[in-house]
Length: 448
Ligand code: HEM
Image (cartoon, rainbow, N blue to C red; front, side, top):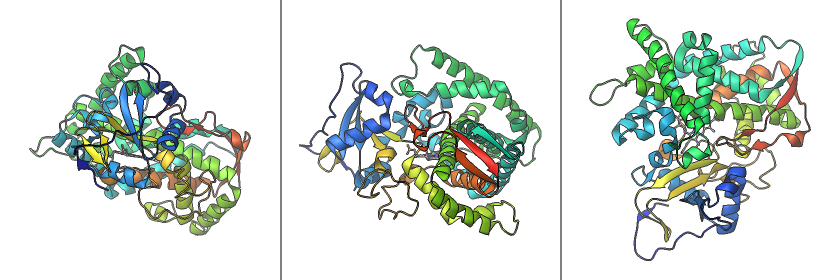
């Protein structure tokens, strides 16, 4: 389904009930936005308009509408305009604040850093980080795995992005700066990221200081000349615009932050949910374990090659991503009036897609709340969309899957895992912009 430029006599999309003066649907949205979006779809169908603190927003549901959302060009449905909240975090002139052609180059350089040629070195880094992490575990114990995976994936992200020197000198200062940047990207920032708010002041200070830290590494590397690093910073430093000029320190810092933000909590939340589901779904977990034991029975190392095909584990992770998609809400801003099947998507409105709602559509996923890695794949590309789709599909898709496979291929053959709390008490926390399991997410482990 393509979207046509506007003609006369188009219908306005139906409006969602329960709008309140001034705040619109913000309160209901803020409590549990994935559920709110499912209500919008149930009440209004394929298109449902709600009010996000004054910003009219149209939820597009179902494979046909989602395909149109993902395939429509940036010049008509703009990500930049929808994600302005990221500008003070990524930096002025970076990605969504850069002019179109510079943004394209920056995104291309970012994608280059996540391409196959770097994946071999990333796989080795991740395998080492996982080994170092479990080295202290002993025979048995109990951990909050959400905390653990947040730490682990911060270490792997920093190591792959900025290299071992930075990773092993990682200070509490860095962690606290990163935390301040994260807090600057809460729901309210999507209404106005420049409001007078202590969290936004802290965000701006953190951005300045982080650039000083990254500039120091850049300067050191420039002084070292030809040395090779095999990390993302090397790709960011060597990429050029059309005129041959290099990215400056602000832009490089912005790409580092943007890549960390895209990959960190999406990965830690998925890793935690995978472990919880492995402990909760014993039958399927045993199938995965048998697969891993057979694969690594000859004592081979966890190389990129070994990680390439692990079908049962992959299907298991896909089912985790179906039920618990980390990025629940994807957004674009309408830049020119659009005709979508006789309905008007008016210039200035936001359009949105909910992965969470799409993955619970019973027409494609019968009995959608049931965890079943054997379920049939839908016959359309546009119903299962944890990584988005079209030209802006997740650039870190391969990295994310490689990391998850690396973690579980190392953990499962060596340890058994059990939930500490009642199985039904492990629930999605839907109050933050990236979905994650509620905290704490405690599990016991025991050596096999
Ligand atoms: C399970 C883990 C992950 C999930 C579910 C996920 C999901 C997504 C989704 C849905 C999008 C599209 C957003 C939109 O259309 O508005 C996206 C974009 C992106 N992701 Fe991921 N992501 C994951 C991990 C990662 C990792 C590990 C990285 C980097 C190391 C990464 C880097 C990116 C980048 C750079 C984009 C923007 C691509 C572009 O603008 O062209 N992601 N991701």
